[in-house]
Length: 208
Figure 1: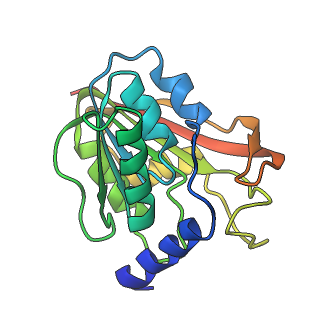
Figure 2 (figure 1 turned 90 degrees about the vertical axis):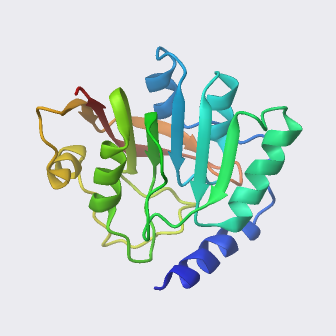
């Protein structure tokens, strides 16, 4: 699938449902970040914008990127309406083609799954390289399919956090894995349904 096709696909996903009036942050983000001092954050695949809005509300300066122009425009409008326009830069960006510029204290990649071709390992290695010393890369993947997920393939396989970390092949002298586990939680979908889901959580800190 080409970049144009991928953008069209995700525009369709977001345009098919009403804009989220109050998108909530992902719980794996809030539990990880609450104790951290605010800095510069990059939200990879910002979607409805719950993570970016929460981070900005905590004092972070957020660059929020998504391949969907619909998602980016909705987030920018929400940020302005909440008085957070100065704290969030929402931009359409194709991480398959290039990585956002800058150095960051936090990079969040929640559910960076897509049906189009994406070299995730390269993207996440670039993310690790964009961390400032002491900065953290939080990768949260699906460990199971929710009933409302676009991907209902029964043959889908979900690599473990340890497998994802191994695939990045990061130098342990520079990056340290602080967390790699598979917690469960009750999630709520866009239509209000709830279901138990498994998250695959990987937290990497740049030590040098």
